[in-house]
Amino acid sequence: MVDAYPLKYSKKHPYNRYTDYLQSVFGKRMQKVSIDAGFTCPNIDGSIGHGGCIYCNNASFNPNYHFEPNDIFKQIDQGISKFIKHNPDTGYIAYFQSHTNTYGSVDELRRLYEKAAEHPRIEGLIIATRPDCIGEEVVELLASINKELFTGVEIGIESTKNATLKQINRRHTFEQTTDAIYRIKDAGLHLGGHVILGLPGETRNDILEHAKILGNMPLDAIKLHQLQIIKNTALANLYHKSPQSIPLFALDEYIDLCIRFAELLSPDMVIERFASESKPELLEVELWQGVKNHQLADFIANEMKRRDTWQGRNYQAAPQ
Image (tube, rainbow, N blue to C red; front, side, top):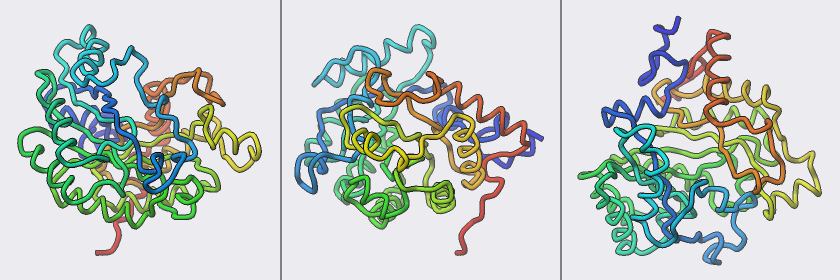
């Protein structure tokens, strides 16, 4: 049955794995190396709001190794040192991860991106940002870099429901997300989307509706993320006041949800991951007794095989 999976990148797995996609692009194993370039966010500095998203604590995004601030080359070297012993032939992608990595002048962005691109071990760039912070000049800048070096954007979608986006204090709409997605893809850039499963007020049906909608958008990849309650956030305060408003999934429930989500996606889309790991000391609530991302991915793949199902099995293309 595995040979019958109608998948674009994965022939041995029931979903398109990001590692297989990168292998198809670069011809070898690739690894993203996180960078904190010192950006802030318009939802923190007062440009559009204060306090950020209710779940936000950017310390939870930074890697577990020692991190040299304000020096992109040193950050890249530190990231590579974590992986190179085990896989010396791996290639590396500079991943501008923390905060909003297009929130600056075009000249400043060009300087930072080109600095990362100058590192001799870097073969690509991925820029994480918000859908309301990627104007035409930034898209043009990234498209120009993409002519010489693989360049992609990871956009924070989080939800397709405006009511949810308002509740979690994102301060943008899904209409802005849709506009950004099509502009980025029209420029020929690789595009990934980030979605959080289990946001306050969202039902299981709401989450599966996200899959139906996003499955018909021109995303190359999607990154799923269970809702994590991080200490010293507005979400942690909400959880203590109204725990019933936040659906924290048991492990078997989350595995089932991810499978049903994947079944609704396009068979051409890549699933970058199903969950995220934050440092245990940052978590207000720890789920699943320390299950790692790769373990969860194995659990999901094995259960999909047991059910004889695959990504895109229930995908329905939108009418043209």
